[in-house]
Image 1 (cartoon, rainbow, N blue to C red):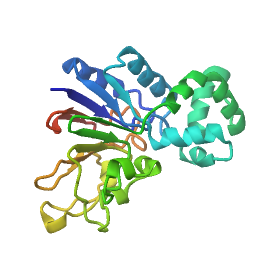
Image 2: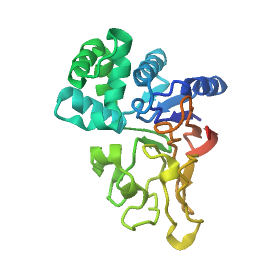
Image 3: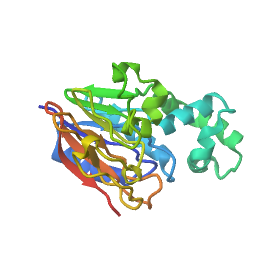
Length: 265
């Protein structure tokens, strides 16, 4: 029986690690899975990347680190300065915070890009190796989601959808109706703060989910006889400083949720 601690969407919040380390002590044999989006939103994005990488190096057999869409758009910009999506999604601030620590303040994105490439080459090379998904037992982790209407959602879902999916993962082909989970595993994803998710169930087997922009607890979509889909983004990106977000503990053999920590401040 393998226990798995899962968290994602840290978005520059170093406060996450105090709670994570408490859970790691409570479950010393657990695997820790980070499901992406370590940067942007708050000042300590590169500190978070360093901390996640340090955990991976210290416990390589018990740490899995996935790539999120924010890491992907950062890599896109660092590979091509004309690919500026990252700059408009927190990247300009993230670069400034990282560069300020080494060179002092500079507003010039092009200059900060060059400094980032030169100063963080090893860390950035590591980010570029991060996978998009991970599976163990009856658990499957992906940053954003899958196209559940495909004959094989895992292998056929395009990479950009695994990083960016929202409504197309929540609903599938029925607008506003939560999709069924055809996989023989619980799916754990982040990417969207759970308070922004809404939808109703096919056949009204459970109450509809309404938006609540101020609260982002762990949310489960599950139909009778199917494995659950767990949405765990706790809203760190746009939340107050020093949030821990959501962290869950799961059991790989059954796919069941054992414990959850929800920072609802």
